[in-house]
Length: 170
View 1: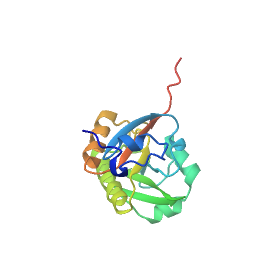
View 2 (view 1 turned 60 degrees about the vertical axis):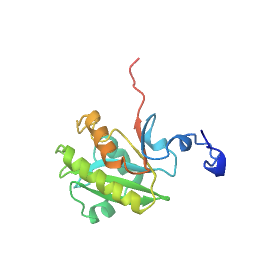
View 3 (view 1 turned 120 degrees about the vertical axis):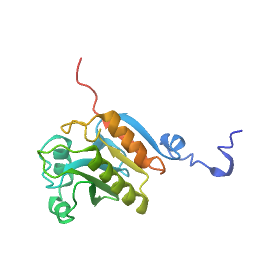
View 4 (view 1 turned 180 degrees about the vertical axis):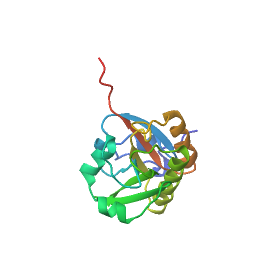
């Protein structure tokens, strides 16, 4: 027996239909630009400890949010997360390797995701948008990364949106 409407369980005034489907943890896949995600959603991506962000999507984060010194001052190491607060949302910088030229490990990625989860839960974050982290220039397998995300966040109410740009091939 469904009692969805009883007791005002859902806020029907919200246009975002995903609110109806994501009670509890979910990973959802979105085709489009990560930076077009809803304004209130926190963002996450992977960087190196040196905060260089010279290539890939990290370079776009650098251009859009800057604050390199503020990130460096947090002195985070691989397996940790640096955080900026911009316009009522958090930008998570998952530190997955020491230097830009290094490759991350699944273990450092897991550690930084756990650190992000801890911060999210402490600060009431329920929605995080990210690219297919670790799978661009870093060459990790998305299947393994998605499994790690699931293992880390499955006991939370956090909805993770994973953005992929439309394929350019005709």
